[in-house]
Length: 632
Image 1 (cartoon, rainbow, N blue to C red):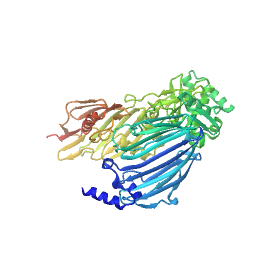
Image 2 (image 1 turned 30 degrees about the vertical axis):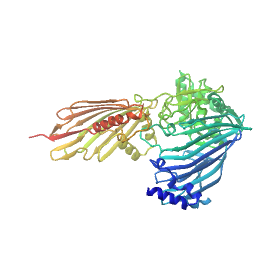
Image 3 (image 1 turned 45 degrees about the vertical axis):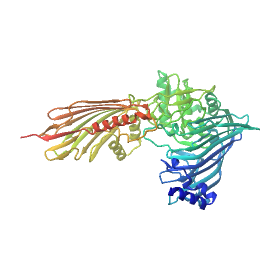
Image 4 (image 1 turned 180 degrees about the vertical axis):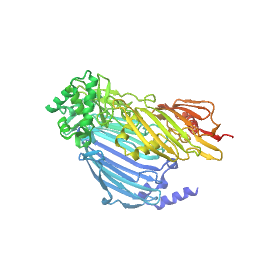
């Protein structure tokens, strides 16, 4: 009652403008679980033609703590997306204006990454700081859109994890005869579509959205949060015009950007013929040309204007000996064409766990390109300077791609690398002393995911960094001093071996006449899933692997096993499999462990059972033996 009286008193005391931003006017239902409350978030896109559009953004947020980045405004742009009219205002808890952010506080930086040779991508950044919570920030800006940023379309997320929403709106309008691909996801209502004069429009509106939790092992944010997407159905970039009405049309348009850019110099053509002379199969030709690309060209990102979608031509790559993913793929395509092997570029969203691509919405959702070989039904990753040909690589596996063809290509799916493809098998020998110190020798054989990682680390890491990686991923022993780390990649397979030798002080803890011995000094799966009451999101595991380990202990003279797990343990669950077997002789112990993490999608109600399984796995991973001095 006192709170209500205070709120009413403040409401009468404050001007109407201040009441609009006052934190006390926010309903309690929107404060629950929220770090930020979005008071208003209005985005309006005005599509003028296939070439140009204008974007207007107005956003007001109230921050209740420091657990978000809502106090920052970040706007990416390039030469085709000019930013104007940036205004940022800070208000206190009662909605009273404290200050208008000065123009000098708007920083402008290059947004070109370290792996990019040159590009025109930039970012405007504003960070507003205030010491007392809650406080409110209101910002507005406008952008003029052209080029790839316009053609790639607009995604509107009214809500993030830990954000609640009072009110938000997204609208677009376009000329009457102009096609737009659009769709809403997890929004409470369909858009309102209107036709007025020479244009048509769509508007989505949301209100009173409660905060959504961030939960471990959930699907990616783009699959959970409400959003709306719209994409121009016709595009014109630097004179290249095309349709985006279907995947075939988009493929055809991208092909037009690549057309005529794969003409190799005559000297290179002659070199290719010499290089492939005597090859007895297309596979051998592909391997030779792939090695030629790896040894003579290097990957460098170049992002200027249409260069985000169009490759530099083959002559440019020949001259400079470098190119981005498009340029190197185009070069490999040209070399294969020279020896009569069919191939097609394939646009892909690379990196991280496989993402879901909505096939019903035509939109360029890609950030990379591979080369598909239909005759071999295989793929070439043309940016990797080391590694085998015709291997998909883990960052490209199990996802949709768009084949680029002159007549228009369709969507394909890359191969899946599951828990029986990503295998690490290890043999560990431990020579234990009576003080608890140990000498360790390990031999690991790896395929696919781990082989990729260790091949790359062997090529680029220093000796110190390589040892740190081994301690973090392969061997767990206190006071470990690694004396040897040797990585032996197989040149023509996604496989490698890793050899380790080292010493561990106090590997086993000594207590009087006893030694307490950890039985699994090898890399595991990390911590168990955290508690999660009232689970809201499904469980999504999108990476699978298998670890098989054998650990052999040579016991110190004068010691014998006093206590050890006698029965084999086997655990099974839709997300994994675990087996632990222990055998002990008079002076030796042998431990055999199989650990599998499987890709799985499970409902929220399955979380407690999922967590219990991995908690039990963690207990077995920490299994100990107790050794005691023999009686004399």
